[in-house]
Image (cartoon, rainbow, N blue to C red; front, side, top):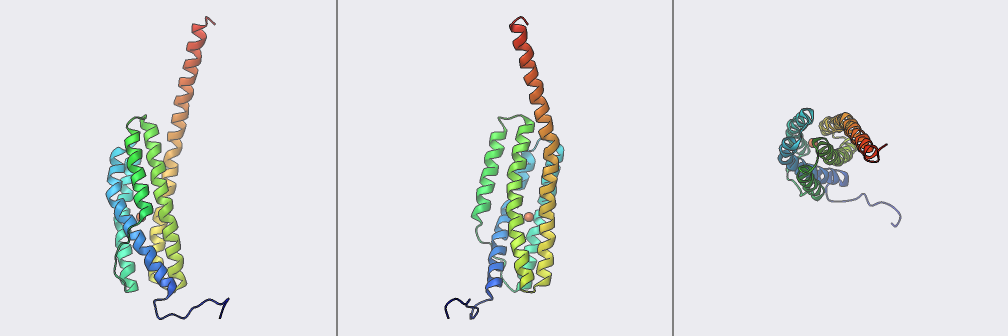
Length: 192
Ligand SMILES: [Fe+2]
């Protein structure tokens, strides 16, 4: 019948199928992050930023474990599916690390925070969707696992925002200082 949704299928529940696809994407994404985060930590200058990346590395290892547990609960193989979005974000992260070498420490750290927050937002989106799908199909234990990880991604994101604030302030006061020095030098040159 036209105009009605076809809910009849011999295949897996379409919501469960979507959930499994989302989890496979996340599994690949998290795996890439386990490899990328030590490089971000190494490139960070501020000790608190280094610490934040290393803390998130530990959490990320836990996220991989939770995903594997979710696959087990769903009776599915924990098979990653290449996450092109995360591959791109990690690639950009590498560029940010390289470009940071030519920048002040504060500017380089702010670049790393920006790159890391893009990653967090991608994950927040993926886990948010996956949690809703799991909840909708009544997979309560999977929902709990995903909600737990989602909470950690959100706090990692807000932690990075908190870290960026004093760095931005420092960068603008340094800029203002340099600006007034230039102005003074110009006045002196002009004999004012
Ligand atoms: Fe994660």
